[in-house]
Image 1: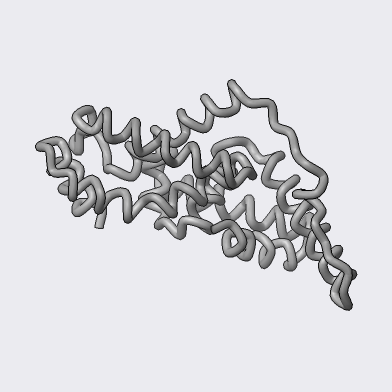
Image 2: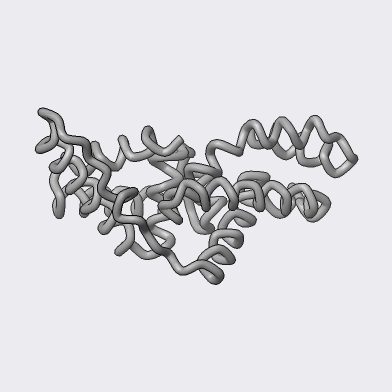
Length: 190
């Protein structure tokens, strides 16, 4: 698949706009989830995805398959766009957006789920950026360890070890429900 992405990128360099459209189709949703879990803001994630693809289109000639794979290149652009976002925006949150619970017979269950969600988010925020990125790419993007290693730098074995330790620590601190919450978060993003 990655060689196919590299081939599409090389076709883009030759002016093939349909090839760029194919890359957009393959990466738009993945990048949106990745960016959302870095910003926790749907509007910002949508805006940043647009910026990423605009920059990718403008800089496609700088992609070099001899230096890495396309996913590594586009995620690098996304990482830089996220950094730019945080440099220019002070995060604020509307209390209505954060705690929007209707009253019904499931209010207590919603409160428990919301509490676990907040605990998992706090745990993710305390991780170092590399750990958080590995967890996000593995769980929400479902990328293989090899590809994650190419994106974040390092060996496949080091990525596996870091992921395992991080998940084990989450389970020990918050219990098995936290793992389920971690996997379910991405289903509520799009």
